[in-house]
Image 1 (cartoon, rainbow, N blue to C red):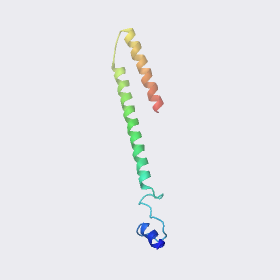
Image 2: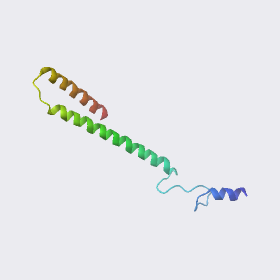
Image 3: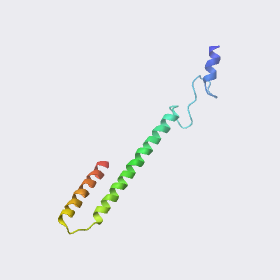
Image 4: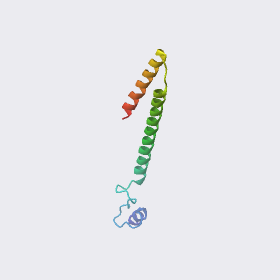
Amino acid sequence: MANALQQSKVGPGSRSGKPKPLAGDSAGNGFESEEARRVADKKRTERERQMQALNLQRENILSQKTSHPARRTALEAALAHIETQIEKMN
């Protein structure tokens, strides 16, 4: 009877008593690899958005022209800060 219960838990097409792995997943853990892929995609997308935002800020600062020394100093400091953040991300 125990053998009949064990067989009912095994997936179709498996004669060895071991569950058959999902298609395209040699480890048999399709949910974990799918979740890992989603997490990696989410991190990559977030990183791309951050880089795009930093580059837009950099372009904005570079496009501003001023003759006021205090304003120029502030823009140079902001540009240095943004370029440091971009370097950290690379």
